[in-house]
Image (tube, rainbow, N blue to C red; front, side, top):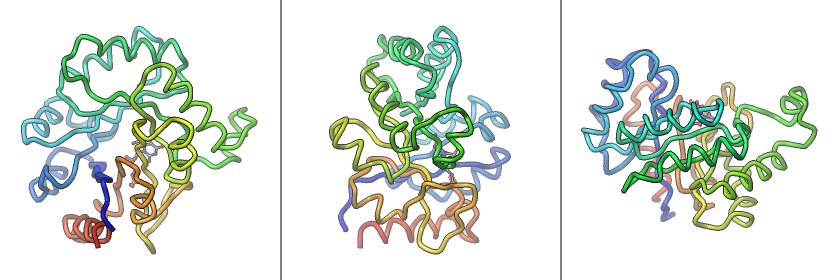
Length: 232
Ligand SMILES: O=C(O)c1cc(=O)[nH]c(=O)n1[C@@H]1O[C@H](COP(=O)(O)O)[C@@H](O)[C@H]1O
């Protein structure tokens, strides 16, 4: 399979030392890195800068969701770190999304700005309990449409919704899909999942993969095996 999907490794570690033990074995030409809430809270912006300095494309996954002014400033702070991509929650609404987009207007090479739709850990029933009456796919479509109208570059969704969004939002709209699980690996808290091979076959631009790599006995080897499965 020849694929244009890029793997971003979710560095969900408790501290910089543990994260660097894996990063030291990775090639920035072959994968990007995602820094999320756990590692960012522990290791902070200096750690993000360190990864950028090592030439990795960094996805800063802090899922900003707040009033428009606050989110706009947070997104700007992310751009200052030199990250490649940053995300916000689409449910923050149109004005929040537009403010985030406007905050990046003056950067010659701004990070990609993407919106989280429905978390890949959520089922239709989970959504209904929060007062959302439609199913996950419909809600993903609605939020992706809103994000596109607000001028964002793409969305985070499950690979199960990729085909629907490619048709609705076009091939240039960036799809970022966590909830990727190689055949036979533990699903954990994820619910709307797909294998890396199936996801790559759909032409999804960014596959986010965490525990199947980071919890493996040999994480670098686990990543390599996934790469091989995508290019075989
Ligand atoms: O925005 C994200 O990255 C994200 C959105 C989403 O809907 N689901 C989701 O799992 N993520 C993140 O993607 C990573 C998935 O990790 P694993 O489930 O360990 O592969 C985690 O760091 C999550 O925080």
